[in-house]
Length: 147
Image (tube, rainbow, N blue to C red; front, side, top):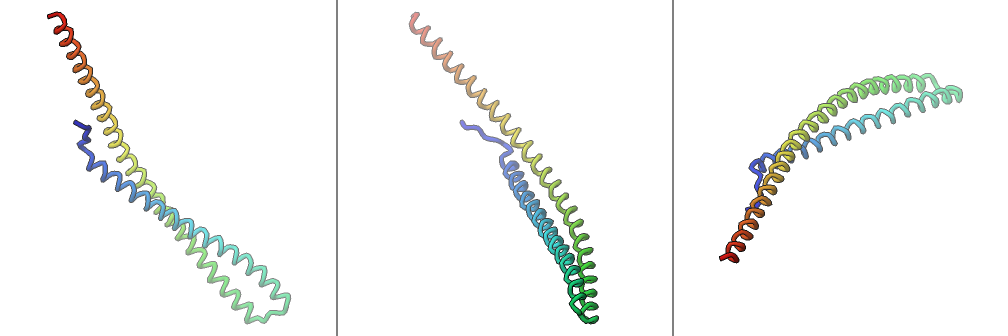
């Protein structure tokens, strides 16, 4: 008779949940990374545009062009604030996803540990039975030689 873990269906469920939580955590990490990269690009653009505005002013840019650039920069600053707010929200979602993953990991690990303990106990019992059978065969053989 081979080893059978009675809670195998529950273990498979926990493994599936852990895989789902892993994917959710990866997705949350990806969203945070994308938002941070967008913010970094925006910061570079704002820095570059400030430098180009001073160059354009020296080159004789019109007031309308400067005002348009100023309005554009104001909108980009607002967008930056919204993006920073979104990043904070995404960070919270990532923390929640990490927490859910760790919980799923622990729950699966508990069942894995139970299965490993039960398998060891089963194997020890099998070895004990085999030894008993060998001992009984040896004693039977000795008894036959005496008679």
